[in-house]
Image 1 (cartoon, helix red, strand yellow):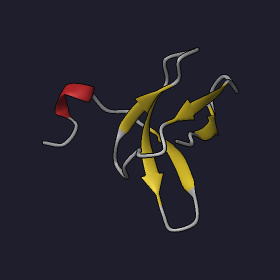
Image 2 (tube, rainbow, N blue to C red):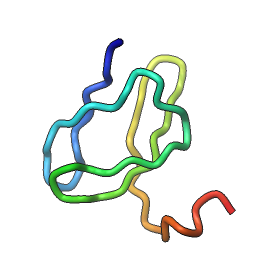
Image 3 (cartoon, helix red, strand yellow):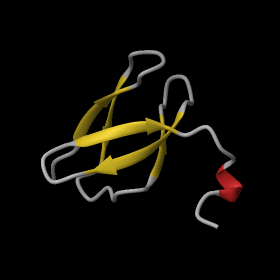
Length: 59
């Protein structure tokens, strides 16, 4: 199983996302705690900073 290596846009830390990560999934940087929404397209995976409230996400 391969992980995707991503870089936090706030602190620059690299961390891994699992191979089966899904589009729209929430994740956070293990170093600084910045929350991201995972954006998956055909050829790439991106992190979009999540500025909302986790409890309200997906409602």
